[in-house]
Length: 385
Image 1 (cartoon, rainbow, N blue to C red):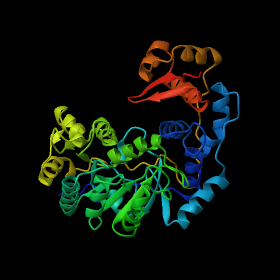
Image 2: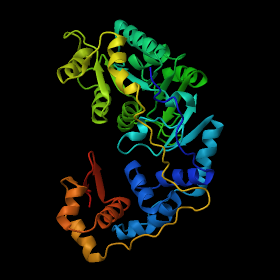
Image 3: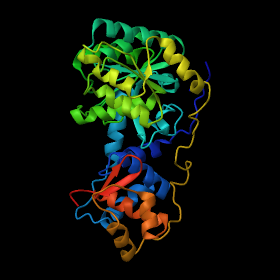
Image 4: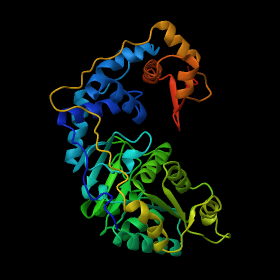
């Protein structure tokens, strides 16, 4: 097998930059896409933090934006250190290379365990929480054989298929993607399994703050981590409305391979996987089906981006900025928006204004909580606007 993940590429953040990054991503109305746009525009997290109040005001917000303080960030970093964890920035060597490439990748992830596992080429194995005995045995066999071939195994720490895949890959490398903070594992029955993962050749990752208890709406975000970290995702026993199907859909959107294990039409746990096969997923009955399909992309370093998106130690990132659009230009851009999602390129063409002006106004609206971002680079005005 080739060398994807064999080299640790990237640029380490300074302590000062890491604090600023954590402050920025923990501030109101700053998600991964907004974080990226702020860094791209202002050059550094520190400069973006300074600009947030004015951006929010120009975007039409009537109340002050909450900005995470330096003390907030330092406390969270100290909590992570006491827990034996750390924060990894998107451009740093230990950040999962495939995750780095997805749209709106988390700028920071919390991680605990063997960081070398993060840079392995990785396969996701997910499926039913209420797994059959044969389903769990097959998941364990797949995880063991794929792991012995040099891949890491990523899953969601759920009972059933996820737990079977993690246990079978404890010695070869496994990653548990979590929906809550690293200190809030779910379900409780897998706490011991999580400890085994973090103490051995495994890693737990999360983009949520320490102390964050997972809620139902957080699990699709966890599924996004699984799909983003993996080169391909294997689905074993998934019902028609299974969360595993969300992982499979996201994997397809990210350009990853989707594998599905066929099951009995009489078993409701197999309705989702059989549906994936109808939609073009790769039929999977043995680990070689996965290994052969992944070989061409595992032999090439597809994920070699090394930019951290921040300047060096001395200059906090000051750069000359173009003046913001005037009120008339801002009004033209806002009037081009509505509740129906539109592509940003269409806004630029429709208004005839410079792309820099359009992006800045969208950033202002975003920080003010008046913009909705959609998949594929589409945006719309918030319904509460």
